Length: 319
Image (cartoon, rainbow, N blue to C red; front, side, top):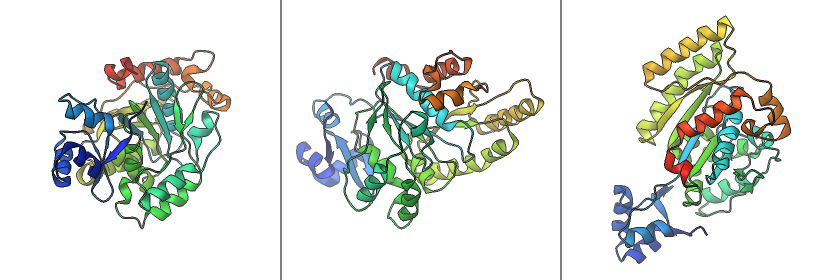
């Protein structure tokens, strides 16, 4: 059973200290807590109990934002495949479809749902623990579905205080329910994507070996630098993932070299390329992740291997 989430006031009362002292403990990292808009904090009951017993609380979930402002680079395919690989390894995993187009939701055989808009609006209006419309998929993954209403939410958030931290606050309400959260970002660098980068602990950048997609890496890199400087100093980039690669073509070979040069210059790992395959579209049409699609493609195998590479052994082993 998942323990409930405590407010700063409740945590301070249990510790027998002032709220100011509790906030200092949270800032110093003595107790894992999530900062929410307004300088408030949320902490799970289990983490506080562990601290009070003198133990070491389990670290929070890995939150991986899969991001590229260019559309059609395989973000949704990547999120679905990594999520399936984690769930098959018995890891409690939540997939967040943070894109108004809801491509991930539909690729997993689900219908877009407007519930996230309601949660965003309620949280912005002061409800610290709004209900989230989590769906349980047949393979064991949990899903926060996307919906076109997210585009409306992005416009409305532009007037909200600390608007960049809304998603971070919403995910904090889940406490330690999940060991892994993967966010499918929209193909823009707008407020929704900024929210994802602020909420994330790590970033994965899928990119197709095409000229326009590769050129967009420079702007994405600049955005990540600004986010680190202003809003999320601990954000890590786990790698650049070439997708839909046709290794026999001259253009792809040349652009892959450019991508490798950019990644080396930025100090970002270049991950093994995912080959182009019609099975990706077939899997999405069937509503299943590529790693589970009948026919066992090399791309699906590579995604399973990528999950094992990206996520620490303790996450994959203690699902």
